[in-house]
Length: 290
Image 1 (cartoon, rainbow, N blue to C red):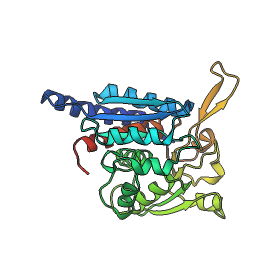
Image 2 (tube, rainbow, N blue to C red):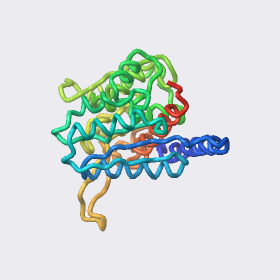
Image 3 (cartoon, rainbow, N blue to C red):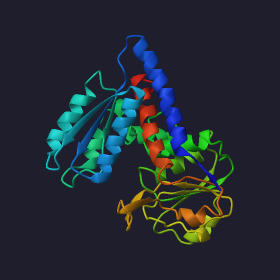
Image 4 (cartoon, one colour):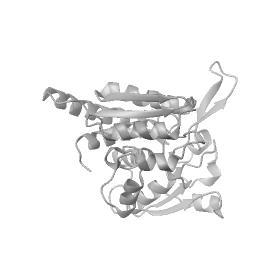
């Protein structure tokens, strides 16, 4: 068993960005600027936004947070997005999900300027990704691609099985890995709750990506010996420890790691790479590379 150390890779990426931002400032140019909108008090969302702000500070990227009560109207939210869209000093914008039920998430995402959509969720960016055109890639799949690339894990000709078909992780990573490139050129099977013979398909995987949203779902009996395991899940599990909980992924790490090849830990794997990818997208937006 070999750990795929997302934390170390993410720190290296942030170091590269920090040096790039320092060079920008040395030229008396303004620093890149990332804005985030947070609605409500969802603990996971608050944790993510806090981590994003901390990462921005560590690299020199300017960070702004627009925080609203859960009762904010959709009209008010769209008005703020319009303001940020037209602010020449703001390069990237994320709207933290989930949003309250009275707000149409699709309408909100579609209102973001595609050139500032560093989350990569706008229909234009998703469409470009599907066509293989330059675009902002969703942060978590992009983070997985960087993990594979920088860990020198071969994907060409490999069978990748993805568990979960969400638009945030499963579907995008399946598309990315099936395309020409490095990482890429893989044969991808996208599985979901209605997939028959799921265990048998998992046992065929050279690379198994678990993004199914169920703690400990992937057992050792579902994994081919030596397979690469990418665990996207993150769950807070209550226990009797001093903290009162522990963090777990979608993979039964203790048992699976005994037979797998390289495997991502939770935490310290995919999660930290999501933040790193978001910063990379912010730099692309600043430099208007897309």
